Image (tube, rainbow, N blue to C red; front, top):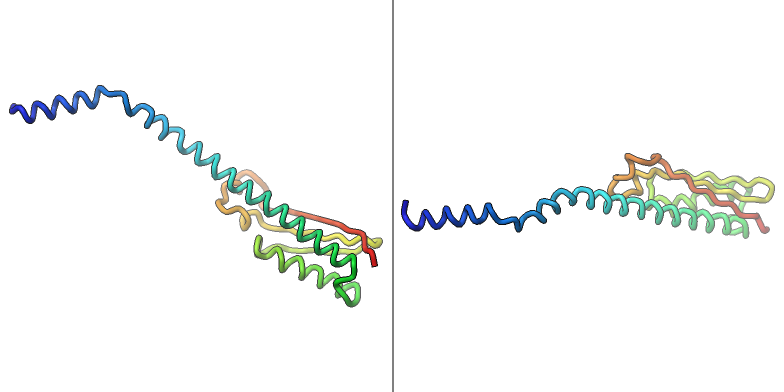
Length: 142
Protein backbone atom coordinates (compact mmCIF):
# COMPACT_ATOMS: atom_id res chain seq x y z
CA UNK A 1 0.00 0.00 0.00
CA UNK A 2 1.46 3.34 -0.90
CA UNK A 3 1.89 6.20 1.54
CA UNK A 4 -0.91 8.34 0.03
CA UNK A 5 -3.45 5.51 0.35
CA UNK A 6 -2.31 4.80 3.90
CA UNK A 7 -2.76 8.47 4.82
CA UNK A 8 -6.29 8.52 3.44
CA UNK A 9 -7.20 5.37 5.37
CA UNK A 10 -5.86 6.87 8.59
CA UNK A 11 -7.87 10.07 8.06
CA UNK A 12 -11.04 8.02 7.51
CA UNK A 13 -10.51 6.06 10.76
CA UNK A 14 -9.88 9.30 12.61
CA UNK A 15 -13.10 10.71 11.14
CA UNK A 16 -15.08 7.69 12.39
CA UNK A 17 -13.67 8.11 15.91
CA UNK A 18 -14.71 11.76 16.20
CA UNK A 19 -17.92 12.47 18.11
CA UNK A 20 -18.42 16.00 16.83
CA UNK A 21 -21.56 15.06 14.85
CA UNK A 22 -23.63 13.87 17.83
CA UNK A 23 -25.42 17.19 18.16
CA UNK A 24 -26.38 17.02 14.48
CA UNK A 25 -28.20 13.73 15.04
CA UNK A 26 -30.10 15.18 18.01
CA UNK A 27 -31.02 18.20 15.90
CA UNK A 28 -32.37 15.98 13.12
CA UNK A 29 -34.43 13.98 15.64
CA UNK A 30 -35.94 17.10 17.26
CA UNK A 31 -36.51 19.07 14.05
CA UNK A 32 -39.89 17.46 13.10
CA UNK A 33 -41.32 18.16 16.56
CA UNK A 34 -40.15 21.77 16.53
CA UNK A 35 -41.58 22.29 13.03
CA UNK A 36 -44.91 20.72 14.07
CA UNK A 37 -45.15 23.09 17.03
CA UNK A 38 -44.32 26.05 14.80
CA UNK A 39 -47.01 25.05 12.29
CA UNK A 40 -49.53 24.65 15.12
CA UNK A 41 -48.71 28.16 16.36
CA UNK A 42 -49.14 29.65 12.88
CA UNK A 43 -52.51 27.97 12.31
CA UNK A 44 -53.89 28.82 15.74
CA UNK A 45 -52.75 32.44 15.38
CA UNK A 46 -54.55 32.72 12.05
CA UNK A 47 -57.73 31.29 13.55
CA UNK A 48 -57.66 33.63 16.55
CA UNK A 49 -56.94 36.64 14.35
CA UNK A 50 -59.75 35.70 11.98
CA UNK A 51 -62.18 35.19 14.85
CA UNK A 52 -61.34 38.62 16.25
CA UNK A 53 -61.77 40.19 12.81
CA UNK A 54 -65.12 38.44 12.34
CA UNK A 55 -66.39 39.63 15.72
CA UNK A 56 -65.44 43.20 14.81
CA UNK A 57 -67.23 42.95 11.46
CA UNK A 58 -70.39 41.62 13.12
CA UNK A 59 -70.30 44.34 15.78
CA UNK A 60 -69.92 47.01 13.08
CA UNK A 61 -72.78 45.48 11.09
CA UNK A 62 -75.07 45.44 14.12
CA UNK A 63 -74.10 48.99 15.09
CA UNK A 64 -74.85 50.28 11.58
CA UNK A 65 -78.17 48.42 11.63
CA UNK A 66 -79.08 49.74 15.06
CA UNK A 67 -78.52 53.40 14.13
CA UNK A 68 -80.54 53.12 10.91
CA UNK A 69 -77.72 53.04 8.35
CA UNK A 70 -79.52 50.31 6.41
CA UNK A 71 -82.81 51.73 5.11
CA UNK A 72 -86.00 50.16 3.79
CA UNK A 73 -88.44 47.65 5.16
CA UNK A 74 -87.27 45.40 8.01
CA UNK A 75 -86.61 42.58 5.54
CA UNK A 76 -84.58 44.91 3.29
CA UNK A 77 -82.54 46.20 6.25
CA UNK A 78 -81.74 42.63 7.28
CA UNK A 79 -80.74 41.73 3.71
CA UNK A 80 -78.49 44.81 3.48
CA UNK A 81 -76.89 44.02 6.84
CA UNK A 82 -76.18 40.45 5.77
CA UNK A 83 -74.69 41.62 2.47
CA UNK A 84 -72.52 44.17 4.29
CA UNK A 85 -71.13 41.58 6.72
CA UNK A 86 -70.67 38.96 4.01
CA UNK A 87 -68.72 41.36 1.81
CA UNK A 88 -66.31 42.00 4.69
CA UNK A 89 -65.87 38.32 5.65
CA UNK A 90 -65.51 36.69 2.25
CA UNK A 91 -61.82 37.59 2.22
CA UNK A 92 -61.36 35.31 5.22
CA UNK A 93 -63.71 32.55 4.19
CA UNK A 94 -65.27 32.58 0.71
CA UNK A 95 -68.01 30.18 1.80
CA UNK A 96 -68.98 32.19 4.91
CA UNK A 97 -72.68 32.43 5.72
CA UNK A 98 -74.35 35.28 7.60
CA UNK A 99 -77.67 35.24 9.45
CA UNK A 100 -79.16 38.46 10.83
CA UNK A 101 -82.34 38.68 12.90
CA UNK A 102 -84.13 41.41 14.83
CA UNK A 103 -86.19 40.36 17.81
CA UNK A 104 -87.53 42.66 20.54
CA UNK A 105 -85.45 45.61 19.27
CA UNK A 106 -82.21 43.59 19.43
CA UNK A 107 -80.31 42.79 16.23
CA UNK A 108 -78.30 39.56 16.23
CA UNK A 109 -75.85 38.56 13.52
CA UNK A 110 -74.21 35.17 13.29
CA UNK A 111 -71.41 34.14 10.92
CA UNK A 112 -70.32 30.61 10.09
CA UNK A 113 -66.92 30.12 8.43
CA UNK A 114 -64.91 27.09 7.39
CA UNK A 115 -61.67 26.78 9.37
CA UNK A 116 -59.98 25.01 6.44
CA UNK A 117 -60.29 28.24 4.44
CA UNK A 118 -58.87 30.34 7.26
CA UNK A 119 -55.97 28.20 8.44
CA UNK A 120 -52.94 28.75 6.24
CA UNK A 121 -51.34 25.36 6.77
CA UNK A 122 -54.25 23.15 7.81
CA UNK A 123 -52.38 21.52 10.67
CA UNK A 124 -55.21 22.23 13.13
CA UNK A 125 -57.79 20.65 10.84
CA UNK A 126 -56.89 17.29 12.28
CA UNK A 127 -57.66 18.40 15.84
CA UNK A 128 -60.58 20.86 15.79
CA UNK A 129 -64.05 21.27 14.38
CA UNK A 130 -64.28 22.31 10.75
CA UNK A 131 -66.49 25.36 11.27
CA UNK A 132 -66.13 28.54 13.27
CA UNK A 133 -69.29 30.26 14.49
CA UNK A 134 -69.13 33.88 15.64
CA UNK A 135 -72.11 35.92 16.87
CA UNK A 136 -72.80 39.45 18.07
CA UNK A 137 -75.86 41.41 19.15
CA UNK A 138 -76.77 45.05 19.63
CA UNK A 139 -79.84 46.95 20.82
CA UNK A 140 -81.66 48.82 18.03
CA UNK A 141 -81.57 52.55 18.78
CA UNK A 142 -83.82 54.15 16.12
